Length: 203
Image (cartoon, rainbow, N blue to C red; front, side):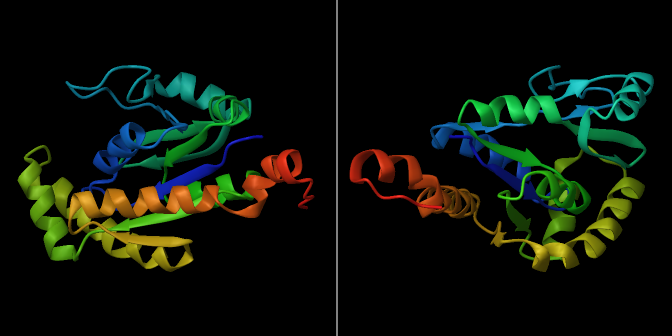
């Protein structure tokens, strides 16, 4: 049976990457969709692990050939999720985490109806500002732009299936983990075992 996409969205600086990294370690049978991007790698990032780094020409070529389920331009850089990369993992029976924005979430659900959408919120926009400033990786104008974007983005959280507040990191990880495990307990996911072990047919 195919796996299920779990889409994680959040404003920049909310702790989304830290949460997804923790989930990969804690939840068996969980994969991660590595996005393509046109931006340059940061000092700690590795190609094929954090992102598939390509130049803008190659990225636009992939757009033209329909390789992406979704793609978007964010802060002057291009990001996209490939059909092949996601479907390969789902076909192996893995549930797959995807780190995308609201536009990407809509496009993925359009192609994969059983996708589960989880939105990670900071406790407040003031705390988000503190976290962005505390990272020390962005200039003031970049932080300002991220906060302005976040104040608009967070309004989309009501369109998601689940909302998790990242006030305490361990608790936030446990809540998303619980969502994944709960979804695995739905009758549709249990259908092969029900038919095989109990003769119960589920449609």
